[in-house]
Length: 290
Ligand SMILES: Cc1cc2nc3c(=O)[nH]c(=O)nc-3n(C[C@H](O)[C@H](O)[C@H](O)COP(=O)(O)OP(=O)(O)OC[C@H]3O[C@@H](n4cnc5c(N)ncnc54)[C@H](O)[C@@H]3O)c2cc1C
Image 1 (tube, rainbow, N blue to C red):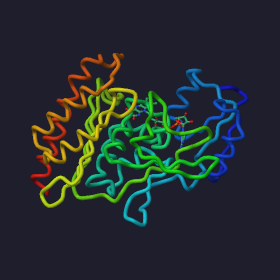
Image 2 (image 1 turned 120 degrees about the horizontal axis):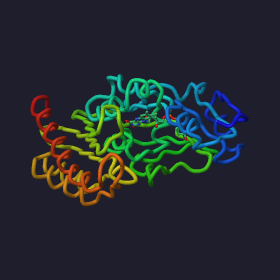
Image 3 (image 1 turned 120 degrees about the vertical axis):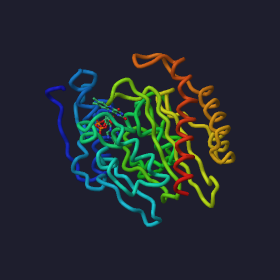
């Protein structure tokens, strides 16, 4: 870290945005949990002149219930808190399961949901879960607040819909519906990022599938999601044939890289198997509980 980096501790979102806007572009950085940023500072990958810590902004902390029964997860909510919140059940359980699969207890104690999705690592666990649950991201900037569907928030490798001097303030979730959410992650060693991950959120009403959300992580610049695959699963009542076809469609649409964890070809082969496994588990669970 530059010896001259100045640390700011704003008390409000508006103050944080003002500090960002008054700073020197890339050299002014928000600091959330520090899990990623401090590692980058230590490795000399970034050299900020000013750090804007979000630690004292009350509004960004914790998980609250919205007037419509939905949930608002503040940007500074730690992965550990999200993994433990029993309100993330039914269709929303996908998010709790994804949080519980991030790295290890140390990272889950440090890292925040706002920091994770802003960094937008294509192998991170929250992005596909938020896309499957059809969440929205609340953003604050010099022009005020706006909301972006998670399906539009992740735009490219490590790139999001955040504009200059904007920050993530919260994740917004519609009220949970009866059904289920699940998150499966294939990794080389426990605690590692995903080679491939599959996030599923299914609303189940009167013996029929009312809504299905399926997303794949680790297989391209952003979470892989196809409306067509969701619709196949819904219309096919999550059946084995629909699951197979949805998996094939997603594998064909994937744009994975060869990297230290796995080859692109391996990732493409794994996607349909993981999708079928997630759907088989969902059918089992629903036949026991619905
Ligand atoms: C050893 C290790 C293993 C990990 N394994 C996994 C894993 O398996 N799965 C996984 O998903 N993640 C993993 N992570 C990442 C981890 O989840 C981090 O918590 C996350 O990437 C960053 O969150 P943070 O709160 O620490 O953000 P910080 O490190 O403080 O910030 C990260 C970046 O986001 C920006 N930022 C922070 N908050 C905001 C905001 N509210 N609005 C806009 N920009 C913001 C910062 O300026 C910075 O550029 C791992 C990290 C480490 C160090």
